[in-house]
Each structure stands twice: as structure tokens, then as C-alpha cells.
Length: 127
Image 1: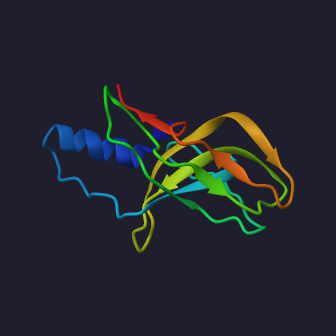
Image 2: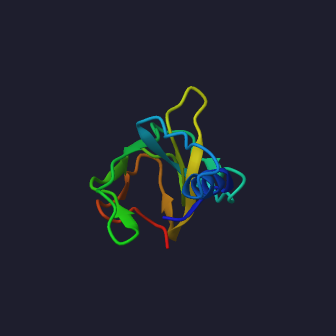
């Protein structure tokens, strides 16, 4: 789906070089849809309205440097908006943003629509 945020990338690099301990994300991981794409250092603008709520991400075990979702992410009763990407947060008391990225194509929804990312279509890769 995208890339690591800068803080997460630094934490993983420090872990892999034994420079610092890694703080494991607090489950569950939530995927938030955004109408303005973020960057590695700043979150995007989350969808608001309708009955939109961030969805829980479940992933299959990684293989060959890549991992994919093993369940669809389904957002019901969306507001009228154009979704351009996602931000991924853990569920800590103050949620930590860990991944972000654009959709392969923007998706415009009408009020009441359902927006879905198919199982296996949400992927993360490290190489």
C-alpha cells in the first residue's frame, strides 16, 4: 500500500543494527482512509462523515519480503468523498502511525456507498 513513516523506518533500522529496542505496535492495527495523501512525516486527511470508521487490518505471514491482507477492508455508509490513500495506525492510547500510501487509483464514493479493499490487495513490502 505504501511506505513506512519516517519514525517507523528509523525504529526498524535501529532494531536491525542493535542500536535500540523496538516498541511493538499495539493491536489491533487500523487502516484509515484519507482524502489528502500524507507523507513519511505527516498524516493525511482522514475521511469524515457518514458511518465511516477505520477498519482493523489482518495480515498473512510475510514471505519473500512482502505481506498481504488476509481479509477485506470494508467501509460501509461512506460519505461523498474521493479516497486517495491510507494511513495505518496501531491502537496505543495515543495511536502511532506506522505506514501510509496512495491507492493505485483514486476512488470517488457517493453518500451511502461501500468502499472495499479486497483480501490480498492490501500489501506491504520491504526490500
